[in-house]
Image (cartoon, rainbow, N blue to C red; front, side, top):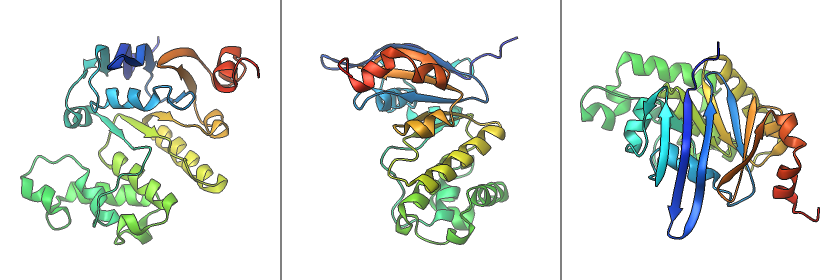
Amino acid sequence: MTAPALLSLKNITKLFGGIRALADVSFDVAPGQIVGVIGPNGAGKTSMFNVITGAYKADSGHVMLAGEDVTNQPPHRIARAGISRTFQNIRLFGGMTVWEHLLVSQPHSESLMRRVLPTRWADPTALQRAEEVLAFFGLEEMKDRNARSLPYGLQRRVEMARAVTARPKLLLLDEPVAGMNHDEAEDIRKLILRLRDDGLSVLLIEHDMAFVMNLCDYLHVVDFGAMIAHGRPEEVRADPVVLEAYLGRAA
């Protein structure tokens, strides 16, 4: 019996004036899957992430998370429902250490003061979770360093670690290996596989085709805001419609 989808996009359309950024997009992410969204620049991939996370409001359609309709909810409510993300351009908090990033990202039921002063006031559960994630991502030696002072590849790790610390059901990664060399990208690939093996579902956008083909269980291809293909990596790689979208009809 097939498990119900963790994430379902149902006929999502997003308009910017007369431009259709997303056109009737539908697909599922099953529990325990690593799913990739690929396509040329400007295809609508990041707009899709922004609709899923509430940064953009869909003009029509539904975003379902574990059977719950989270369409057009505020970003903080969607995050609490179980979706965390990283960004194409790294967004770390200025003046905060790696350790503080892992504390402030966790949901709190306590007072505002505990969130404003995470290092001093974090509860034992938050401290334990931060320690676990710090070790998982190999960031122990950087614990007390300003996150923005770290090399680019380590900043990517911190951003991923911050997202994971919140215990999401689904992790969205927007170009997680952009700007990295082969060895750095391979380390991130292994981290994502470990996250999947620990039970986390992952939806990612990436332009590095070798990385995607060696990581994802399933791929969806977007062009001009519409889904043009989907399947396992080996199926998508050989699809003539996908080749045309990337290379052009003449190629």
